[in-house]
Length: 231
Ligand SMILES: Nc1ncnc2c1ncn2[C@@H]1O[C@H](COP(=O)(O)OP(=O)(O)OP(=O)(O)O)[C@@H](O)[C@H]1O
Image (cartoon, rainbow, N blue to C red):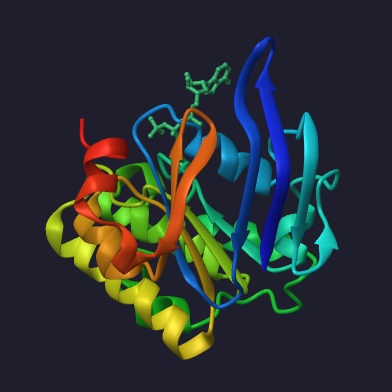
C-alpha cells in the first residue's frame, strides 16, 4: 500500500501539489489521471523520492519513506518507468538491464529470464545500443529494466506516449499478467482513456495538484471525463 497524506510540494516558489491525500492498495492496478500539467509526474517523483515533500507524509508498505532517498525505493521493491524512458543510449540492451542488478535487493547478477519471456525482442537485441532501438523497443527495455529487480510495485509514467498500437497492446497484456500472476501492484499515470480503462481497476483524477475524484474504474463516467480529462 502506498499512502500519501496532506502532501505539499513546491518548485521554488511555485506550489504544485496541494494537501494531496491518496491511497493505492497493494495488489491493485491504479491509474492516476488528469490533464497536462496537473502534477501527475511531480506526484510520482515524490513517491520515488526524486523530489522532496515540502510537507506531508508518504508511507510505502507501512514504511515511512517521506525522507528516504531515491536509492531506497528499489530496495523496498518499488520499480519505476519514467516518462520519456531515460534508457542509456550508449549502453547495450544487456548493459541497460544489468545496471539495475547493482541494487542491494538483487542477490543474483544475472538478468532474470522471465524478462525475456515478456519482451522477447530484447533477447534478440542484447548487444544493440539502447540509442539505436525504436521507441517501442526502448519502452520495452525501460519496463524490463524496472522488472529486473522483481519489484512488488511497478510505477509507470505514460508508458504509451508515442508508441505504436501493437506495442501498446503488448504493454497492456504485460501489466495485466504481472498483476494477475504475481500480484504486482501497478501504478500508472495515463492520459489515454481506453488504455486506462483496459488496465486500471481504480482511478485517481487530479486537477491543479489535488485529487478531485477517486474510485473504481467503472465510476469514471462521462461527466468526470468531460470535466477533468477532455481538452
Ligand atoms: N523542474 C520544474 N521546475 C519548475 N516547475 C516545474 C518543474 N517540473 C514541472 N514543473 C511544473 O509543475 C507543473 C506540474 O508538472 P507535472 O509534470 O507534474 O504535470 P503532469 O500532470 O505530469 O503533466 P504532463 O501530463 O504534461 O506530464 C507544471 O506546471 C510544470 O510546468
